[in-house]
Image (cartoon, rainbow, N blue to C red):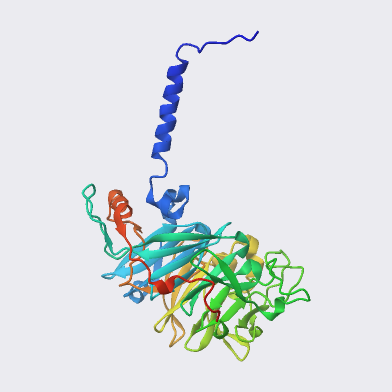
Length: 417
C-alpha cells in the first residue's frame, strides 16, 4: 500500500518565496517601449556604440530641412538623421532585419519591410499630440516622432526586400518568388508582375529564388516602373550559391516589356527613377550610375558596397556597406578591406561628393528615404537624448495618431495597374 509523505517543514514557505520571486520577475518583463514597439525582447539592449559616427565635407548642411530614414538591416535597427538648428539629431528604432522603406506623403505614413521569418510590414505614423491625463505629466511631442501604428505578417518565403508606393498602393519585391507583389491593408498579397525569363512550360517559376529580383524604380504604374535583378537566367546555381556567377550579369527589367532594359551590372540594388532616367547602385563595384542605351553608365565610385538610394532636389543620398567576408566574391570591383558603412551626398549637377557620414562600427545599409523635416525629425529614441526615460514612457502611454485617410486602405479587390 502506497505511503503518503507529508511536506517537509519549511517547504511551503520555500515554494511561496520562489513563487514571489517568479511573479516579481514576470511583473518586470516587457516594460520597455523599445521592446513593445519592435515586438522583440532584446530591443532595449541596443549597443549604442553602433551609432558612433564621423563626418566628411558638408554633411549636416545638406540635411537642413530633411530627415533621412535609414535601415541598418543586419544590426536590426532603423535610424533617422537630420540637423536641427545646425546640430546633429540622430534617433533610432529597433526592428528585426529592416530592409525596404517607402514613404506615403499623402498619408504621412512610413512603411518598413522586416525581412525575417515570417516577414512583416510595419506602418509608422507621426505623433501630433498626447492624450490629456491626470495620472501622468504631459510629455514631449516636438518633432512629431514616428512610432509603429501596426504591423502585418506575411509568409517568410516572400523574402521581401524593396518597397514602393505606386499609384497610391504599396508594392514589394517578393525575391523568394521572383515577382512583384501588391500588399493589402488586410495582410494579403497578390503577385502582379514578373519577368518573362521565369516563364516555363508549366507556367512562371515562383517556388524558389532564381534571379534576386530586389528593387523597384517606381513609376506612375507597374508598366512605367523598372526592377533590378542579379541575373536574367534560370539555372541550378541560384543567388546565395558559392559558385553563383555575378560579374556583369545584373540587369534592369522594364515593367512594360518584362524584358531586360539594361545590362552590365554586378549585384545591382536600389533602382530609382530620377528626371526620367533609371538610376541604380552597382553594388559589386561600389558605383552609382544610370541606364543608357541598354547599358549601365557609372558616374561615381564610393568606398563600399553601394545599396540604398534616394533623391532630394539636386542631391542623391547613397549608402555604402561593408563587404561581409563570405560574400566577397559578390564584390569583384571593391577593395573589401577598405569598404565602409555610411551615407554619401552626391551633387547630381556635378557628380561630385558633397559630404559623408561614416559609422566606424557599422555593417550593412539597405534603404534610405528622405522625408521633409516638418513631417518628422525621426524616432522617439534619440542618441544622446536630453529626454528622460520617463518622458519616453509617457509618450507611449498617451500618444495620439490621426487615422489615415480611407484612400490608404488598400484592398486586393481594387483594379490592377
